[in-house]
Length: 233
Image 1 (tube, helix red, strand yellow):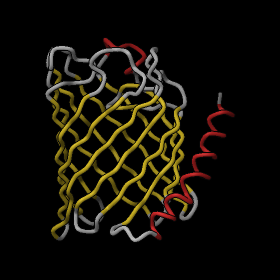
Image 2 (spheres, rainbow, N blue to C red):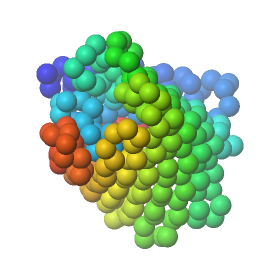
Image 3 (tube, rainbow, N blue to C red):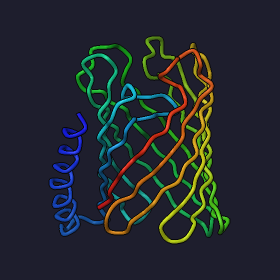
């Protein structure tokens, strides 16, 4: 299994890098960037999406240079049904005023191949951040009127906060916390803490501990240690 995933990651790098380069050389305005990654567990808001197994991930983004951006991101998943991939599509507007940053957008989650009702849903989100110099803080809120897995148009609000601080040129530490207010389902909190090592022109390694208070979900929302190896291009 690990050998197969490493092979797929290598293939993704081989295919995606020339594509991004050709996009950059085209007459299209703005800037294209991309990323590929492998993780030992895909965790979303404290809950495993890959059944505590490895996942391969990747995305492509376009930035207009004037605040508007569009992107897509995908990951392998394991829900125990026919769905094997999560495909996200998003667009928004972001900017900065001195040390203050803001980001407003729309995000759609698709699960191709799934026969289960209520999987696909959309969210609107808003984020605000401030760079204090030694550290930066970001707070955000995501809202959907029809949450994942809901068949009765149950709404959901997710509140999040992240604090990060660089240590030298190649290392940064960060911590995050979130709260899911779910209509018709148990509300819960999640949190994480970790560090990222960035090797310029090569790859980044993120080491992170996750946990939640969603004890009713058993091992799917237990504490876990996640290693992510990624490369941006």
